[in-house]
Picture: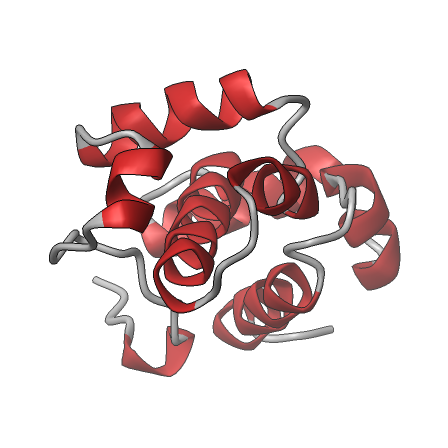
Length: 125
């Protein structure tokens, strides 16, 4: 059995490796041999955020980097990161950064991106 600090780091690694895949909590929990509920609860207790929120913030942050660093179409980036449409991506991006993806792509400015979690740096009290 994993120590939960190590287990959550493996979960983070799995999420990072599957950001552009249609991944699910069920697939991930099967990988580690625990129920989806238990994995989700342990992730939340250790990190202070839900697994769903972590995946969402990492996907939108990685998409922002691609908007800034490539000339790919907004639609292509939206689909790559699992959004059902360009409109859904635009709503999510605007909610996260108060700026549309098209406006950001035309004139990038500093925005607060979510960084990858490193569980070795988390302190459990």
